[in-house]
Amino acid sequence: MRFHISTLGCKVNQHESDVLTAALSAHGWQRSEDGDRADVCIVNTCTVTQKASMQSRQLIRKLQRHHPGARIIVTGCYAQVAPEEIEAIEGVHAIVGHSRRDELPDIIVRTVGHTEDAPIRAVDDLAPGLRFFNPATAAPGARTRPFLKIQDGCNSFCTYCIVPYARGRSRSMRPGQVIRHLRHLGQQGYHEAVLTGIHLGAYGLDLQPATDLATLLERIEAEKPLARIRLSSIEPHELSDGIIARVAASAIFCPHFHLPLQSGDDAILKRMHRPYSRDFFRQRVVTIAKRLPQAAIGADVLIGFPGEDDRSFEKTAGLIEELPLSYLHVFPYSRRPGTPAFNYPNQVPPQVAKERTALIRAIGNRKKQAFIEQAVGQKIDVLVENRRDRATGRLKGLSGNYLSILLDGEDSRMNTIAQAIVQDMDDTGRLGGQIIA
Ligand code: SF4
Image: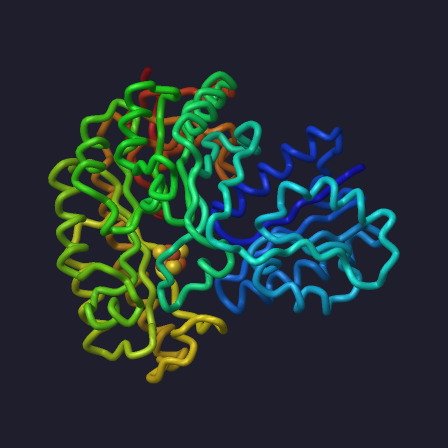
């Protein structure tokens, strides 16, 4: 049996496709790459915006064209929230929701004898109390820096976001399992893992006995299962002084934080149902910068939320200008049916949102450039990735504070931690240097 997996959406979705690949490979099935024939095509869908849902449908149709006769299995967030829309696409063999993903190998086998017109539908309501799905082993995929999902779901219900409906309530991997998976990755020769979740700051609150992210990080620090650990996005109000201090004093946690700001205007934050103010966000970033002056600090920004007028946009732009941020992820607001904000008045015209998005991206590019530039002349420890840069053929290294650098060296350097000297920055803003140790 040859299977093909196509993935849309976030890091968590990518990680879940890696977990699925590992599970199917354990059944003796073979993954086929793009262009190869496949007996089964799995589409891991996204529904974060209307566009993502449309792309999910397009991908299903594309795979049907490229793999005539293959069984088409659709899973992921779009499958969870809109199974009837997928059912309307002819030639889909099974639709599998989040809580049934571990049954996927069996469901694929069942599609062989399934003769009804309607696809197999394995989608449950995501009721509170759902358990965290803990894979047998961590699934690194083809990455130098594998993801480890330690938390799923969200209880926050921000008014623009479909995720709590698509993934259910927050649930966490037990701390002992986190250590076991990280240790296993270390034994397999990995030097870094990225701890991910849908709402990482809610880690552990659902467990019995309850715990939290700061306590987990302390245990990881004490047990040092891996050389480097990176944290993915943490909500500003959940990034405690304790977590910042832990990273500042750590030998293994990367000095890299990513915080969703979304808006720099308090009234908009309130309408978004985001439980912090611009001052609170400012204070978080300033605290990080004081404790870890070399840290990378990234932020997400959502532009064009209903009610965002020129004044509130200027507040967002002003806050971003003022803060020592290293890079931005900027998204124009997209109306998502099924969320409260879909019906909010004062929707921002798409052209205005587009122009504002471009302005914030320009600020983000300037800040990123300045952050990269200040590294020239410094010595940095980098993890050398297992693939060369396509354009230059040089090795690629990534520092703890998220600087990417092109280096000369043999393939034997790949997947090792090396010390490099940063020598220059080219016109495109890429750093170049040499390995020195
Ligand atoms: S915190 Fe808000 S934006 Fe993030 S997943 Fe939860 S509801 Fe969505």
